[in-house]
Image 1 (cartoon, rainbow, N blue to C red):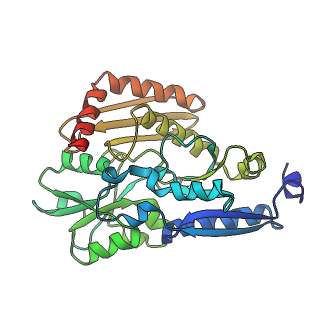
Image 2 (tube, helix red, strand yellow):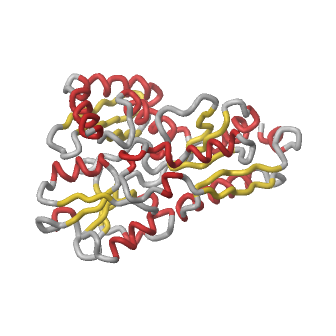
Image 3 (tube, rainbow, N blue to C red):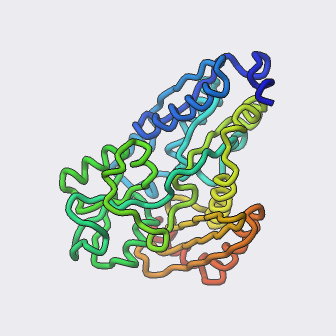
Length: 321
C-alpha cells in the first residue's frame, strides 16, 4: 500500500497542515509534518499557522465563550476553502461532534495523559496552605480539586502554555494545573513539580493525544494518514469520547473519562460532578478492548444510575445564570 501512496498519482505533490500558532500547537504540526515527510518524501508538506478565537479571548473561561470549538473552527474553514488539507489538534480540544463533512482520520500515539501540578514553592496540592490560589482552565480539574482540597481557592487560568507559566512565575498563583503532555512535548518536563495520579485527578477524554482532522471526502488522505493512526490509543480515546458525547461533553461540564489497556483488556473510568465538587458520580468497567464502545455504554449507564444527568443539569443551570 505504501508504494501506491508514494506514487505521484496517489499523493498530492503538496500538503498543507492548518495549525494554531501557539508554540505547543506548532510543535504538534511540525511533528506530523516530519512523520508525513518520512513516509512520503516526494510530497512537500507545509504548515499554515493561524490564530483562533480561542487564542484571542483570554479574559473569560472557555465555558463562558463557546467552548472547545473556538480552537478548531478557523482551521476547519481553511480546509473548506482549500487553503489547507488537514488540521492537527490536541484531541481534548476537539468537540465531540464534528461538523458535517469532517472526520478524524488518525489519532497519534498518546503522550502522558496525566495532569501535572506545577508550583515554584510547594511540592503538592496537599502541601498548599488554606487560601492558596490554584489556577486551572478546566471545570473538571476545578471539581476534582475542590472535592479533595476544599480549603484552596480555584481561579481561572487562560492563555497558551507559556503564558500560564509566566502567570505562575509572576506570583499570580501559588500553583497551576496543566496537562503533563504539553510540558513534555515542549521540552520543559522539569517544570512538573508532581504528577497527579488518575485516582486523584481523572484525565479529560482524549488528554495527551493528538488527532488529525480532514474533510471526510478526501479518500486520498484517509489512506495516506492511516499509518499515523495508533490503534491502542485510538481505542482508548474513542471510548473516552463516547462517554463524554453521551453527556453532551463540553467545557461547560466537569466530566472526566480515561481508558487504559493491559493485555487486551480495557479499564474505562469516568466521572461527572458539579463545579464545586459537592456532588459527583463515578463509574468503572473492564472488558475486551476491541469492544471499547460497548464498555463506554456500560459506563454511561452506571453514571446515569447515580443521577449523573441531574448533576450535569445543575452545571448547565449554573452556566446559564
